Length: 322
Image (cartoon, rainbow, N blue to C red; front, top):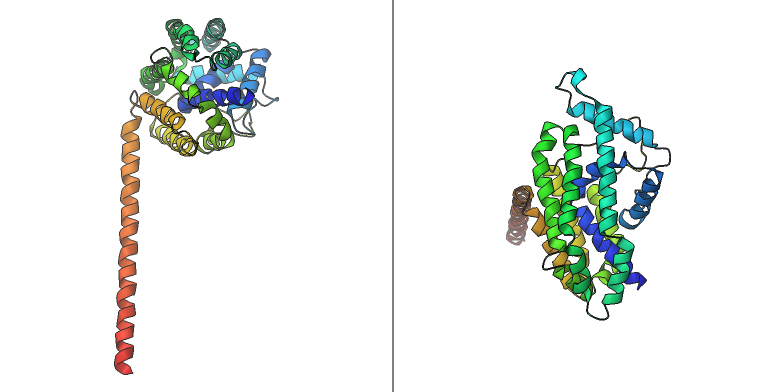
């Protein structure tokens, strides 16, 4: 049971990481609004989802530090406006209240520990669809809560961040759609086909994929006086990182005895990718990589042919001399 539970948590980690390249920044924004208990909860989640060395909020970082970062971001986003028209303290307080409402909403809709217990009880009976249908009926309310929190963040976003915001909301919506496709049919199939066990088998590999793709967003030694909150964008770099993470995770999951879990995870990435501009970026990077490989292969073939001709010439000359 514990192996399946941990494996299911790893699936949730991939769902989270699918939009990590931009939602990580949102998490940093909302972190400034949480109390010490919330930070403890985040550290506990990090121990499940993040690589070693990146899982915990450093103890020397205070809530005051995080709130100061938040106010700095609000000031930066509103720099074109006259200083008298920008109240960064109030904007931060608004986000704090919205974050509180978001946490209350999530806690009221789903308790991860309870869900995991229900899954483990329903799995032997083949009743997973009943469990997921119950929670999927609550998804419209979850969307409302996310929209409410996003509205509070908007005043502290730059023009570039705002241009990406609608796309990010669509991606988050698509993640919810994927989880609740046919009332959770995909997730139920993932669990029934030993997906949790597959993830548990590759727990360390998934962590390595996460670290390789996104580790630079999570400095192991955080100097709070030098930190700036990154922009909430999904640009070419983030698209490439997300694709690298997808390829790495799927490659490891494909080695499991059942191919279904890797297929479902790959489908999730592709399902989300359709709502972004990432596919164009990935296609271009893949094409350029293939062209570079072809050029190197061509150069190697030419060099090999030259060596062959030279060797034949030496042999002919040697025979003639002898």
